[in-house]
Every structure is written in C-alpha cells, then in structure tokens.
Amino acid sequence: MKKYVIGIDFGTLSARAVLFDLKTGEEAAEAVYTYPHGVMDFGRPKYALQHPDDYLEALKTTIAGLAADPAEVAALGIDFTCCTMVAVDEKLEPLCKRFENPHAYVKLWKHHGAVEQADRFDAFAKKEEWFRIFGGSSSSEWLFPKIMETLDEAPEVFDATYRFMEVADWLSWRMTGRETHNASMAGLKNHWSKEYGYPDNEFLKKVHPGLGGIVGTKVSAVVNSVDETAGVLNECGAAMTGLLPGTPVALPMVDAHAPLAALNIVGEGEMLVVIGTSTCHIINTKHPATVPGITAYVQDGMIPGFYTYESGQAGAGDCFDWFVHHCVPASYTAEAEERGMNIHALLREKAMRLKPGRNRLVALDWWSGNRSVLKNDNLTGMILGLTMQTKPEEIYRALIEATAYGTRRIIENYEEHGIPVTDICAAGGIARKDPMLMQIYADVTGREFRVARTGQAAARGSALYAAVAAGVCRDITEAAEKYARPDAERYTPDPGAAEIYEALYREYKKLHDYFGLENRVMERLDEIAGRAE
Picture 1 (tube, rainbow, N blue to C red):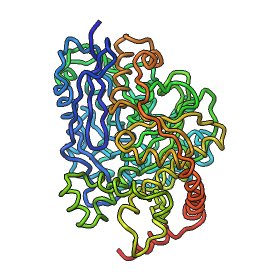
Picture 2 (picture 1 turned 120 degrees about the vertical axis):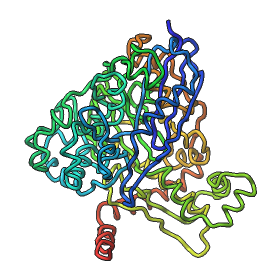
Picture 3 (picture 1 turned 45 degrees about the vertical axis):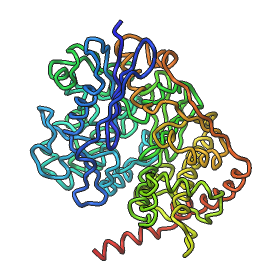
Picture 4 (picture 1 turned 90 degrees about the horizontal axis):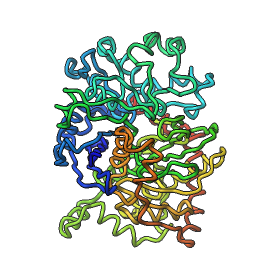
C-alpha cells in the first residue's frame, strides 16, 4: 500500500495542504500558500473577486512544499469555498484572460453584488415546491444570482462563457480531463437537489429570458454524488501537481463540510460549527424536515445515507478584522507593538477582564448581512449602548458576543423545526486559537462545546476523501471511524455567566426580530445613500 494521501483546503485568503500518513493516521507535513492577488473589489464595495491563477499556483506550491515522494502518494483530495464561481471557455480558460471586466474574474463566495438578482429569483421561486429545500429564500452568494448579475452587467462575458461552475470542479477538470460537478456544492449553493435536479429551463426563463436553456449548456446538468470520484491525474494534472499520472483524485468537497469526516461527525444530532472568516453550522439527519432560513440541505452529498443541513453567519472573523482595521486607536496599536503582541491578542487580553454584561453593549452580527435565519444580504450590523466611556475592548467583546447570539438563534431554529442538536463540535482557526471566544459561545448557548484538535480539519477531511478514492477505505464513514481525531478541549457553560447571557440574549432577540423582520430603517438608509450618490 502506498503510504500517503494529500488533502488541500482552498480557503478565502490561502490554501493549506496536509500530507496524511495512511499507516499512522497523522499529518506528516503541512504547507500553506497565501494568494498574492487576495480579494479584489475593483472599487465596488459589495464585490469580492479573485484571480484563478492563484489557485493553480497554490496547487503546485503546496504539494511541492510537502516534499512527498510522488510514488508514495495514493490519492489527492481538495475542498473549496462555495459558491466560488468561475466562467470558462471551451478550453477551460477563465474569461478574465480575455476580458478586463470584473465579471470575468472568479466571484468569491462572499461576493454580494447580486442582491437584486437573488431577490428576483426568489420572487418566482417562492411558489415552487423544491424551494423549501433551500430554506425558502436564496442569497446573492449563490450560483444563479451570480450568473444573472453577469448577464445583466456584462452580457459579452455571459455570451462567451462555455461553463459557469464552481472553481473546485474546474480545478479537478483541469487535473483529470474529466468534467464532474460535486453534489455538496451543487446542493448547497446552486439550487440543485437529488429529488428535483436543477430548476428547469422554463422556470429559469421566467426569472430572466436570458437564462432560458442554460441548464445543460452553460451550467452542466450532471451532478456527481459522494460515492464517486473525480477521476485520475492525466499528463496535464501531473504537471500541475508534481504527482504521477494515474493518481486518483477525490470529488471536491465544500470547505466547511470536509471536517465532518476528520472529526467523525458522520451520524445524527451532532452539530459542527466552523468558525473562520464566516461561520457555518452543519448537522446530519436521516429524516429530512422543512427548516426555514437554512442555506439548504443535501442528500448523499457529504455522508452516504444522510441529509446534511447547513446554516451560517456571513461574518465572524471578518467582523473582528473590520474592527481592528477601522476602529482601534493608535495608542492600542502602539501598546501591541511595544509588547510584541498581535492586536487581536491585546484586545482579547483586555476583553477577558470584563465580566458578562459589564460592557452594557448589545450588537447585531450583520456586518456582511444575515445568512441564517433571516437570509437577507441587505441587513447591516449595529451596536447598541455606546457612550463616551466605551472602550475598544468592550466593543470587541460585544462583537464576539453578537456572533455567539447568532449561533444560538440558528441552533434554536433547527430544534424549533424538528432537528435536535445533541452535541456541538467547533472547528476552524478561531475556535482553536481563541479560548475566550469559545467560553463565551458555551455561556451564551448554555451548551458544551468541543473543539477539534487538528488545526487543519478541512484539509485532513479532504485527505480522508482521498483515502476513499484510493480504495484504502470503503466509504467516508469507514475512513472517519479509522482515521478521525476527536476533540482536545471542552468548554462548559459557567452558570453565573450563562444566567446573565440568557437575559442579554432576550434583548438581542428583540433587536434581531425588530430590525430583521419588522423595521425597514436600514433599507430606507440605503435608499437615501443611493440618492445622495
């Protein structure tokens, strides 16, 4: 048996690879590549675009950085952010090579330029039976709204497109020469379901005349389930990766869902909370239920025999970074530099000294809109209770508390609609590195949180899917039982803090419902700002 498999996690700002030892079950090496182009907006605040060359270079560089003997690598697996959409021509070349137009670049998952198109899609879809699978509403982050935005604003790019597709599937197509489209991404963000398939072309033509006939042409009608593979490396793929031709490639996986296998979350009731730039909340069930406000659920897309549900918060680490980059005074920056500390570490140190409720602040965590359960990209954040005496660390803590309140609301929504949450496991860089945040999450929700031991849960999960592709394991459930690494730390609610947060959460919930469901102040402010421009 060959000794290793490789898993690569393509994130928002970087790609992280692990060399997974099939004999010991340990990560033998790691490599990281930061995308040189980063996230581009071309001067448009709601845009989040990337350059596809960054992914190709990341693939080559991270695998080389693992220093593995290609003859000992049994298979390769990748996961990716979703929906991260690329438009390509018949030669699989991204159209940004031909058009100097923002819509020809990769539209990252958090590209929010298609709000109007998502609303238009929903106006027609709300009468359709299949729409319940997607929580009764869409998002500007999803495939069809992003395609519609291209059609509306860059028709020349739309006309030149051979395929609109997930970047993950584009990468595997480039590596193997075989076109596949993974069910995990198609089901979560592309309006596909195992039961209904894609929305039919007649429906899409009603939404926008230019979408008529798109399924089966510019959008492939074929979707592959989790028990399939992407193929094997061809000569081009071998040159791209430095691995041997014929090396199996696993079907790509959504980055937030790849950790399920790595953490052995392959049954019912346990929720995975992946806390990073944004937050994803994932849970499996054998019996589907209609849950409003979710992202979607996918049958047999991640774990065979299960319906996997996802909800999420559009901003978490992004929100904390916003505060650091725009609101921290120079005196704090100077103190951090003098003490050789990261500014986040300094703020956490100061915020840890505050007792729950003492900052007298309540915030709404909608800096990037609300992904669940309101599913409204137009919503914006707020902080209530600011005074002339409010300190930066008090605001920083309030932002963390806001994301914890948002997570609690999502948990409650599942349970209110028939899907019990029995256990919670947290993963992601923030969960592993920030004990204060995790304790706040436990106190706010009144539940124990377990934190994943591995720092590369997604890349490790992709490596386990690669083990299945290599034939080392029968399926991903067996791979999880054999190779999963359980949590390292547990955070249990502090009774005193939990009591205070229970009262604060009730106030958050009032604000959540008032500004999210009843009040139109934010939309009116948007209209006024638009007129001012």
